[in-house]
Amino acid sequence: MLIVGQNSDKISKLKKKISKFFAMNDLGPTKRILGISIFHDRKTRKIWLSQETYIEKVLKWFVDKAKQVATPFPSHFMLSSKQSPTCEKEKEDMAMVPYSSGVGN
Image (cartoon, rainbow, N blue to C red; front, side):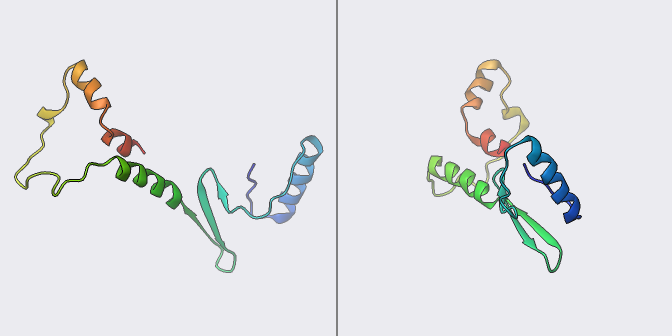
């Protein structure tokens, strides 16, 4: 559980109340939660959130799966919505293409 607030007295009281009902450990200031890195600058009262590790993991997965080519498409190559899958078979075939996974991530 992550407890966040501006009033340290209220946070301490809340921790005491919770500890009466649940076994808990105070791990100190949060550095990471749910894969998000948290950076604090108490002097300037700023907090930064970073998903750098997650982004690197996604990029590595796609780089490992990528096929190397000199140029991906000829310069005159044009895409059109008419090239989108129209029937179920085409949609199933496109589901096997990792592009949609990358966009989804």
